[in-house]
Image (cartoon, rainbow, N blue to C red; front, side, top):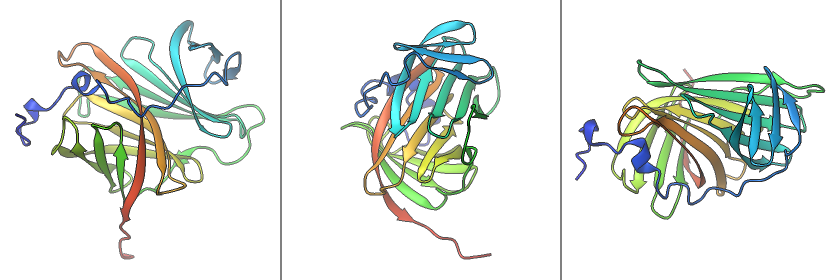
Length: 243
């Protein structure tokens, strides 16, 4: 039995994976044959992406009309989350890296891109989620609560699943892609992992997210990478008094 305050007994990332992807959305092939110029060319071919001199398995999910999220892991200690707005011709790349040391052990880098013909605002950090409390259902077994505290911190609590009763406050970063659609990421300090999600908050009674977790397995040596999805709803909103 897990002792809640003894973090040495917490479930490793690879122990969480089974069943966590039940609410993952179907992938799409809408970007097949298309190329995009980031730091170098990115070309989508079937269920793969040609990236940085190699071809890697890739999953692409629709987020909104002409807005896509693609996730790929070349196999080393970096994973990539690419958000492409093919209507506004803008992109955001999140690079998640497993480091040898540090707290958190897994870090993230955010790089916005303007593609040819770019219009509208650049994807940028957003405070829009601060004060919200939401519930996210990843499967019939896995449910979590998120409390968005500040631009740097959020608290999670497992309401149902193998981590039931566990909770922590970890680093987060939020970017806005479109009004009501946010890239929300977090970096855990107990388990060496980080997550990237894109969440549609436009209808707070029927929120939807897609994402990936990336970190080290129970041995602390091998990378673990998997994608997932969740259905959510807003539970409450806290508004702090001015000043």
